[in-house]
Structures are given as C-alpha cells and as structure tokens.
Length: 275
Image (cartoon, rainbow, N blue to C red; front, side, top):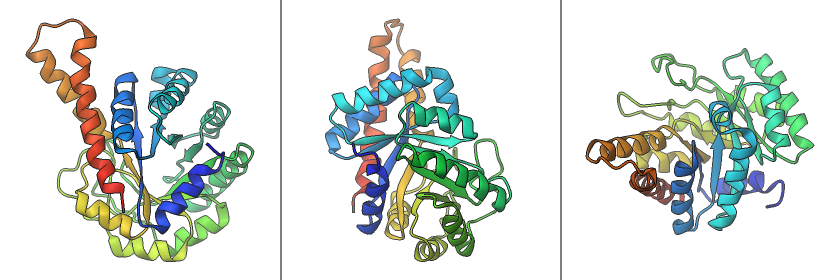
C-alpha cells in the first residue's frame, strides 16, 4: 500500500458518494470474521484498534495480526488508531506502522483541540500517515446521549484550516454504544459541513443506525463509517448461545459460529457502503 493511500481512498470514496467501513477488532476471531466478509465482498476495509484493544493484545501482536490477515485474505485495507487519547499513544502506533491515527481531543475547548491535533498532524507527516480528529460531542460509552453538542459548519471549516487534518469525525446525532431509540441524523448539518471543508467526513457510532440513514449520510459526504459495538455484541451473544446449549470445551468448535455471525454482520454493512 502507498503510504498516503488511505487519505486518497477516502477522498475518492467521498467524490463517488461511497464509504469505507472501519471495523474494530478485539481478538483473532473477530479479525477473522471481518476478513472473511471483506474477502468475499471484494471490498476494502479499515481495521481499527483502540487503546484498550492494544493493551489487551499488545501493540506488536495486534499490528502483526492485522497485516498478516490483510495479506492472507488478499484484502485492501489499512490499520487505524481509533480514539487515540494521547500524543504518546499516537507516536507509538505510528512507529508500529499504523497507516492512520485518530487524536481525540473533542472534549477539550476548540483551541486546545486544534493545538493538540496540529501537533499530531505534524508528527504523522513524518510517517506519511492519515490523521483523523473529532469536533463536537459524540457520546462515548457510559456518557449521556441526551447532551447535545453538534458540530458547527463554521467551526469545522476553521478547525480543518487551522490543523490540516485529513479526516474529521462529526457530531450529527450518532453515539457510541447501544441506542435506546432510533437515532436521527442531522443530514442538513452534515451537508453544510461538507460544503465548507474538504476534509474526509467520518461517522462514529455506526452500530444500530438504519441502513437508509447510513446511505443518506454517505450521499451527503460521509466516507468512513465506524462499526464496533455491533461486532462485540453479535460475537458474544452468539458465543453465549453456543455455550448454553453445549458441553463442548474445545474452543476451536465453539468459536466458529461466532466468527460466522461477525462475518455476516460485516457483509451486510459492506453492502451499504457501495455507491
């Protein structure tokens, strides 16, 4: 992969009103499920790792698994740091060979967010890596979904101009984790943001958003959609069902149905990404 291929691919997707699916993986089994789906669909995919997943698997192990899987399944893909919370973690990931990193200082005042993001953009340039940031309030797990803090188009324009960031996660009504009711995306706001900035626009909290809403968001500029919660959920619920109905102790026999469930989920999501 060319070093800057992810940045170029995101822009190409945006121009043709399509999107890349960015999937978090947590172990070998979830990674395999994602790879099976992407391989069968013959579509590219972004493999995402959070701090907690990196700490669980180990940085070198996680990157090696991802690179090996992309090669083995012949899938075009990239490795991305999701919600990087410190400059040091970003640097470690870049040195480990990540294609893209996210620095998330969205809960800080905008000028502080700009300063931190600008530092990361400067650092990432040495590695020819893509950089994503977030502007606005996208509720994280455990945080209130009642609080609002949507991304303002004029602030998005200013933020991108000041930082030089390649991709921007926008707050337009999505949230991380499970939704208690169907989310309503502010598509008019998204369209306005897309008009005033040339950054690739990212939708976090893609789990649980109806396909029609995702397609409308892609039509209005979203070119990267994150999927995490649904992957964890379908893997664990399928595994629990297997364990409750069987005395099998061979993990090589109880994991495959959960892998298949992840694969089927990702195939469904990939079908939405096409223009």
